[in-house]
Length: 310
Image (cartoon, rainbow, N blue to C red; front, side):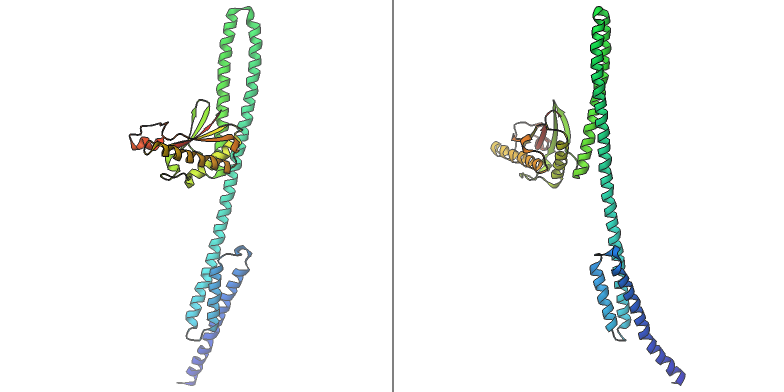
């Protein structure tokens, strides 16, 4: 080997550890910068620990293991950087989701306030119309024919005004239901009118077979219903439990009572005063469909929440 070649080989051998040291210092600087970044505080802790351990292994590695240790350290530092960035991005997404939900609730509240104001305006108009009707009746007393014309006109006005007032009330109630669903994170149970009562129905899938514990989905619906009922005044509430005709009558009645009690307790836990609610188990005594079919039996297995004056 010539002297020149020997010198070159010696310089290369000395340069390799120096290059590895430089790479290690660069990786250490990157990891230190990551750990010092307040935006990533508390994020990717496990990945940063692995990166720090790999840098320690690189510093202690011999010449033969140094290249492999450097590769591992590079990968670990990169993984820590990516993990911290991903966690920060997910945190920002969660924050934006919360802001969106808050904006939706606020918009719903504003719509409800506008609907209430409109309903109040229509009530005042109805009062004015009633006063005007009384005045017109007094003026028309001198002529029976004129009286009949006035009455017909007043009935038309009253009918139109009543329809507008009812539409405003329905709009107000719909907005209140939307706000309740947004605040509780679940939809209200399906509803219908029965005389002066508003009836909310939980189907048979609200409970496990033979059980009286609400499923997660049914519990969310009852929570939303409770929010709505608290905003709707002091109407009295009756919870009716029903079963199909299969099984012994007494066992069915007891199961229906336990289910009605479970819904009543869920409403109370969500803030509805207990004094407003009573629960009754009817067993299979009040079917709404044919118990001779599976579909009919499924419809008969239900809990109904009746709100008076709805």
